[in-house]
Length: 169
Ligand code: FES
Image (tube, rainbow, N blue to C red; front, side, top):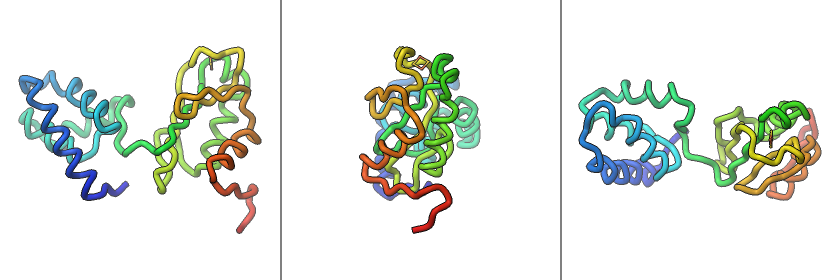
């Protein structure tokens, strides 16, 4: 995903503010990346370059760590964060069907953002509402007993045009 000039500048500036909080040892890499993600919501390439220069390692070293741990995001989060619960209870009640519905409707995979940056999709562990399984949490709001039709309804309520399966507009 292409970053805007503003995003590149912001990510460099914010990362430079974070770096002096650490002595610059190699072991600081993950804590620094966590801090960058906490601040920016993701770890973009310009931030990785700044971190690499600070720690005296290559950007590729940083990239390898960022991609190894799935706690890190490489692209900016969408405006709406859709978290599909895949804990045991939700999984037993068709959580994977719900996850597939979100993927199909948004045309993205888990961990991705729609091209218009409206939605991000993640799978999460039990969110503590098992009696309401299967659950989807959108921007912190729990949606209980979700069905594929409900997925369409939620997207419709967010102003997204829903195309019928295989239909053309
Ligand atoms: S398993 Fe989904 S809320 Fe507990």
